[in-house]
Image (cartoon, rainbow, N blue to C red; front, side, top):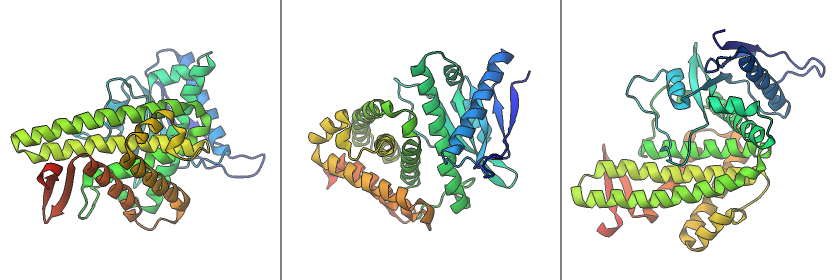
Length: 339
């Protein structure tokens, strides 16, 4: 067997209701040699997608699922990125190993969304241990939620995919980070019920991202002071604090998904903001903005809805010593010590 399977979804004939599923989608499990394991994993995904659709999750934009030993490499291959081109994404943290991602892929004249999972997730869904099954199911539900929200975003703004995003006078790198903050917030909020206990992981991850982000930003500010080269510092500081905000998006989305409001519900984060009131106020603003986006998702008229997230991310960067603004075709960067 090649490990390539095709799921053909039948409609819910018993209720005579169409389910929000594609007519068909591919499942690639060639990373497993055993045909028996391949078929068991494929059966799991068929049942899982039916179950998620029955809860109301819209998976009509789903292209397929690929399990691979290297999820990042497989995802880049699906996107057909030229060699050497690196997508804008979170930095890999040493203590984590990426389990999954969902990417936009062009099929004919339109885009669909493909879930890529590490091979280990496939084995976890077959595990006899409830904790391992729950972790895997939560991971699959999270990526399926990405399909739902990215699919809606594509239907509303088809020009967002497959071309360079025009951000006007905003930094493209930071604006894309703002979009990613929403993406992870929405996916976490939609899938939180499948693994409520993940709040501990997201709480810890945010605090770690903040600590490492602050350390990295100081390193890049010092580099700028010593070398006078602003571009590298500009790029890397946007990256690290963009990742901090994305981690906040995960945490806030999960909190709201299990019907908890406020960062005070996350013990580690609560301790951090108690010692840093300006950061606490900023996160409270972010929480309100993301909740408002959630309530208005079906009524968005332009990508300007993400401007408040972008502005708050700029505020976070400014809190840590750097501000920037566009002057014609150039970016003017100001460190706090220069003011």
